[in-house]
Length: 106
Image (cartoon, rainbow, N blue to C red; front, side, top):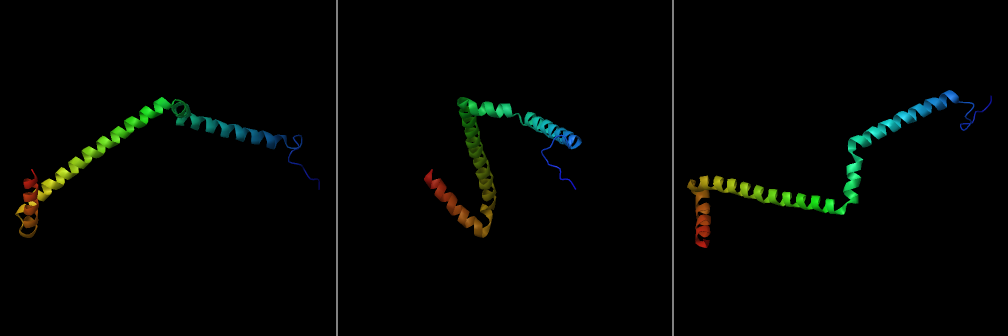
């Protein structure tokens, strides 16, 4: 039996053509994925630091404002629910005392 070397192009023309077609298909898939990801925009974002700083600053402002408004809404709803329970015997006593402390602070 003769041993065929993997590097010998003359011995495997069909297999090499098949391999090249497979690699070309894979490269086309990679190029399509890079187009979908819009790698150009990502690279531009990191090559222009001013653009990145402005983007991160506005994102931070949005998060901070959202957190503040969300906290205000949740605490307002919680206060409204607690005000409903003021008339209950056991809970109402503690909430009434809490309300007196708040009114005294005003």
